[in-house]
Length: 202
Ligand code: SAH
Ligand code: MG
Image (cartoon, rainbow, N blue to C red; front, side, top):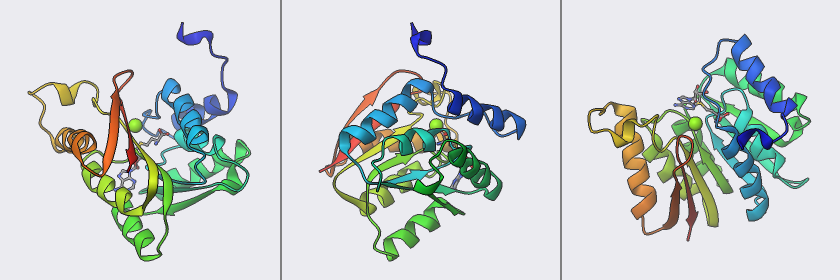
């Protein structure tokens, strides 16, 4: 049933470049990639902040949903990864929509607040330890009605298993809890693939 979708050549190229460069093969799942494009279109977002670029798979999915004047800012710790992501967005014809900010996303987000930047769509998908902090900064950077999406709610089942308590697992558990209970948000968790949480800032 899942392979009724045509092979997406641009995204296949991204996966190939990730393998070639020996980067981690942890791009967002294809079904959620398609969902990101649809959600950006549905929300008519014009300004997206992505936290964690890797090879540009989710970046392409997000940028595909933007209108002509829409922009994506993508935060990535590793310069080499950001460069590969940029090449992949260029190859997909989306290079002029994206700007990469290299370095620790926490610092980049603090900087964006200082620059009085705001966004109407967020995709939180960097290291899991700091996911709760990424959520706090996202809320600060959000316009009213902004959409905040977080990937990997289950962390390959670890968040559901009390035997796992590493810092990343604890980070995602806190993130999921915060997404579910923060009075500034309304949210839902989609339990397919590795889990995805979608929130709207009130
Ligand atoms: N969103 C991507 C996958 C991201 S994987 C996709 O679905 O296509 C997580 C990424 O977060 C990695 O590229 C990793 O280098 C980056 N990362 C890890 N710690 C970070 C930090 N502190 N600040 C910014 N990026 C970070
Ligand atoms: Mg992810």
